[in-house]
Length: 94
Image (cartoon, rainbow, N blue to C red; front, side, top):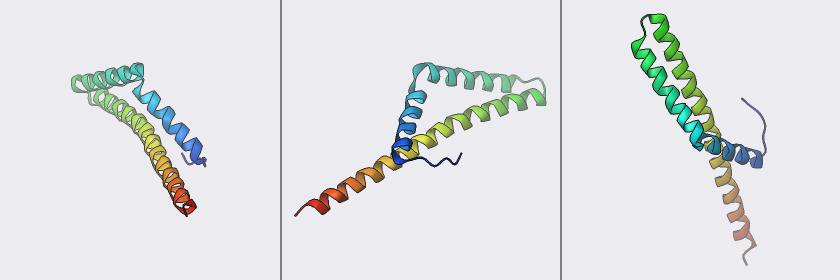
């Protein structure tokens, strides 16, 4: 997903991703799905059934990782903004 976003948009997206991932309902849902996929994967009667559960688990992890990437991008953007602001203040000092 290569969308050109402003620094403020990156930070806002990161904050939203963090809010979503830490929402109790989302956390409960991820935990429940992960446990169920693993349970069904282990109990799978056929290779196809196990493969389906494995793929669902991988998709869940990919989804979670994408949100984590948004959060990391926001952290980098905040650090860059803070560094620029510190440099401005230092330049403004006599």
